[in-house]
Image 1 (cartoon, helix red, strand yellow):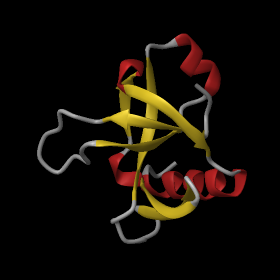
Image 2 (cartoon, rainbow, N blue to C red; image 1 turned 60 degrees about the horizontal axis):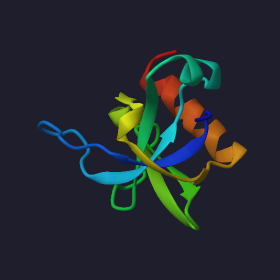
Image 3 (cartoon, one colour; image 1 turned 135 degrees about the vertical axis):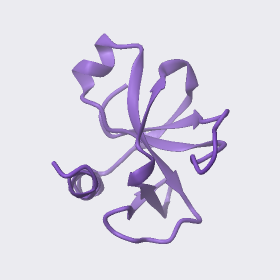
Image 4 (cartoon, rainbow, N blue to C red; image 1 turned 90 degrees about the vertical axis):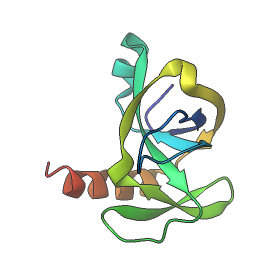
Length: 106
């Protein structure tokens, strides 16, 4: 489980406005941390969310353009990760990192 990997993640159960269902998510936590912990930090991907940088940014995933929903960043236990779906391209990972810096004021 490496930074930039895309996994299908079961995000249920959720509460309120949290993003729901089984969906692809990008791992954004550092690879060494992923190896040491039982959790990973992810950003969910969506086909329906409209691009609104920096909260929602376009990335290429699974042969189509989707959006990374940066304000829904969360830590999940690795048991929620169902299946590896691919890897985010470096340029998309950099765009996601830039958006997260803005969203988190880093």
